[in-house]
Image (cartoon, rainbow, N blue to C red; front, side, top):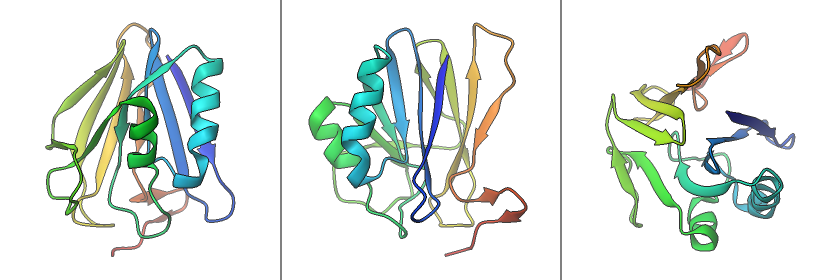
Length: 146
């Protein structure tokens, strides 16, 4: 499994690239970092097939539509998200397979009503599970409720 956190220091938000077997998902992409995601995935031999947003963002401009336009990747949001562009609605408990990586959607409203956390598991390796909380949990504190 390829797993990469990308922290952009100006506002402290993180994006992630998760993938295997030549495909990947970009989670919480920023608009201004789309070329960076494209370059990293190309270097790793990965094709971006999914874009997952953990919530509608108020702290940065999402790069989901810009990245989808460049890659053809499907955009995924929780079904309660109030957005007006083409996307796949996800529900609590849905699973998305990215190669051998299983991403399980956990609806975790609090930061926003449409907040989700993502449980990441490599189904081929005994590696520990990873949880991406999408600004719901932070080291030493919790996210602010919007």
